[in-house]
Length: 333
Image (cartoon, rainbow, N blue to C red):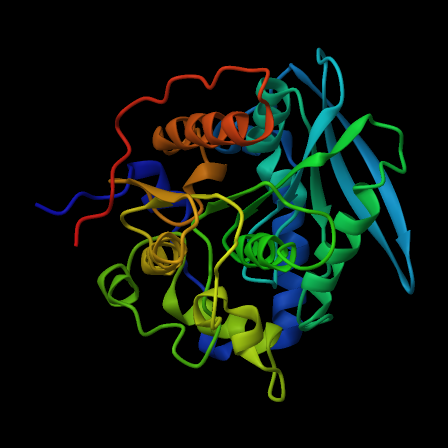
């Protein structure tokens, strides 16, 4: 028997847009509406309330030709140099805000005693590749030097990314093998790890094509807008890289009903094969984007707990990892 998504997910996250007919101007207009909704307190019944153990503040990072907004979470109680976690929201490179990860980011900050920074990176169609990834690189390089005086430990940096944000997180993790600040761990929630010409050629894409959270037409539209003709899509597709050897330890949390499930599975399998400590946790009734909807998908709490336990082990030698509930499991073949 095939499990169904939770009722709230089927009602609120079902994609009703005719993506084949959507224009770039439509995307910008839809994004403005969704951003207004995401920042509404009324939506917290689905997205969860921020953890009171973390303070939230906004900062701006001035870079050549642009100014990036940062949504910063700092622990109310923490001692010594603090780990830094850079967080990249999902949205297919065409939508999304750091606010959609408030519940995840605040929980990580409070439990880890870490500074967690949600990056409001540039989006398509206004900004195509490599702009979003360049923003991630620039923020990482800048914040590792602790310009705001948060007490960041430059030897304890991790990345978190959801969906397209998972692309950025994985690319930063792989970059750190040879350049930039060293990344100690990568946590990827339903990551998109393949934007090449074969990015939809995975069994999970066909199997979960009708599930809410990520429709195949939206996936294709996102790819077309973020990576227009002339862009080497393989450069943004970690699973197509010739080598992943030497990558930081990785955890992927993903739903069994997610069309992009095999993107995560393929990435973790390759990391393991090339000697990296890596594991995947798959949640049976979860769809794409579930970790940002704890009010709709109970497994979000399990996934966040697993992420915190993993990051604690990688970043905080002074803290014992918290036990992880056993409901997560490897995806069936």
